[in-house]
Length: 250
Length: 323
Image (cartoon, rainbow over all chains, first blue to last red; front, side, top):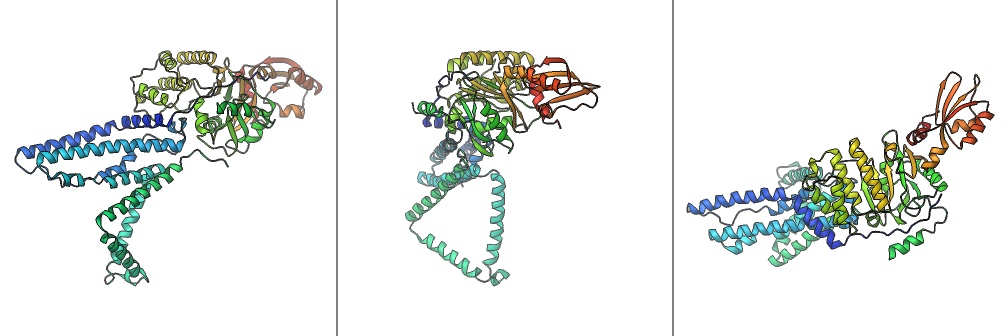
């Protein structure tokens, strides 16, 4: 019954660098349609500003609100939309450690996000130059740290939760309700919330902490904000990626 | 090479290891999805240690939910068994998941691909990047043989075309283990025959252990060395193809009025139909042994007929429903 057992030559797993490069490539491929739409929007914007400049108007004052952080937060939703993250899907059949694979995909998305932000900055600078707007002002309008942090939190949300949209909507709803409660508590004379024991003292403490924060020198405040924002984002991402590790034995 | 040394060490089984494919695939005390899987898996795999390459295990099921896809997903570490452990080539499927998956070519039951926005060529390139053993020349040949058009978007492929693409993706890195879940599903008869021919050529060319889950066991009959029958998560039978053919037969017997079969045959009788005083049974066991038992119990043997492989496998499924 038992045959002679020939020796099996086992195949190697891919190099980490190859996996990352391939993820960058395929992520870029998957975002082509969105890139085309973004380029079209910028093209329309350029045409509008250009026509205004030609007509003798201010054209571009480099003072627009730039929603890069918001875009970065939702960018992971686009990046992962083809993958069934919590199902036995194609992605997880690849011979790569799942946490590393997820991290490689997040990094690939980050690369393309930075390419997009850099392209956007170049577009702004060009328009600013043409319109004669101050360059330093234009560059400062791009919140790079907030963009990176928002991307990390967005990635954590998508990778860590089965239904991130539901959580997002639910979380937004809770925040909205808390806002209403906060408003009520901030007008103690007009509201019955003032009679909740300790509520007024609590919000007074929060107010004082915020005052202290706002009194920090600009550079220290920036450094601390960056550290906390990115640190919290990385921690959230690590926790989310850990959900996809090769499963433990009993 | 570290893996090879470990593999050699793993081959010294202590007698408790439960093997599918000799040292190639080991299901060790594994309960995959249901409580009932464990004892049956253990019993059958203890009885038979199957060695060498070119093993093919066909799993037949009457209804969905038999556990065949789950068994494959457990080997890929896509899904966790309720208990126990599984090994492929001596590698634990959980702690050594990436290495295990590097040895496996997998065709899932579904034809749909998550990356349907890619062209076939891009998808092939994407998968190839994750397998250092990818044989580009062989992949090009497979693309030609299976008629895959690289420029077509995956989402535009028909079921059959999608399946052929999956064959290219599964075979081109010449894996030592192929897990094929309903591989001929969606293929028209001509393409099905051609695909099975290519699969046979691949097996002749590349030492491979293949596990096929199929409803249509007759399609892989010529390729299979061994057949396992899964039903409701339990491995109800597992034996070599020749043994299955030799030991599972249809017996037509004449019995006296009010005759009841002996208890040991009742438990081993997968199928029974009555027409007057004549019984027709599909029974598992050596023909001489079964004939002697029937005769001793007062039955007269009228005919003993061999069965096609599919009918023999089906007999074990109907055992489940036999009171």
